Length: 218
Image (cartoon, rainbow, N blue to C red; front, side, top):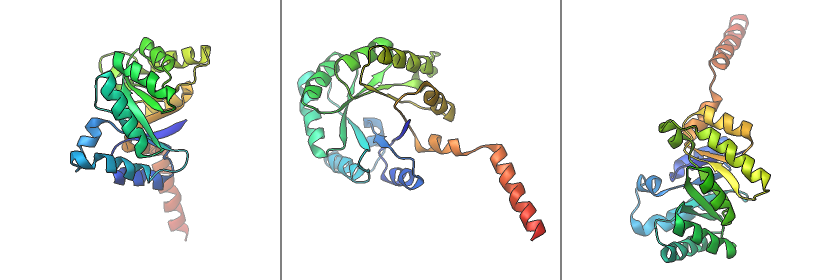
């Protein structure tokens, strides 16, 4: 399973890269708005992110348009910025049409804001390269986000659909490990959630004891 980090921050991306766990990056308008950017520098920022990535890694950069014609124009513009860019498009009627159009032009897309099986089926039917179901946001409203991931995986496997499941809205390490059990393509998460996988109290206790015993002897 691949690990993407959900950020637009260059330092976080560098940290994930140094840790050796970076497989890709996802952004959205909210994450972009947290950076010290003006509107004219956003495209250059996307290029800066791409320049940090290795050969098999990519960046999902989200459009802000909400109608079909503008979605296509913005999607094509983003795709021309850098070969590593995947055009992230929200789940809506015009979004599905835009994904279909861009996919026919061999432009990779990521269908985002997916919360149901039906939406995931439409994303795959339209040719989306990634589908991004939001696990944590479903949990927030007392729905089982991981159950949705399982159902999408089963349906995609049933019909040999090529769309890759990229679980989003990851809130804690258990989301990551459960997605791994399900066997999906990737998760996208804040870096701190991925780093929490490193931690275990027994590891800390064991390391402390090993070092203490060594120092007592030598």
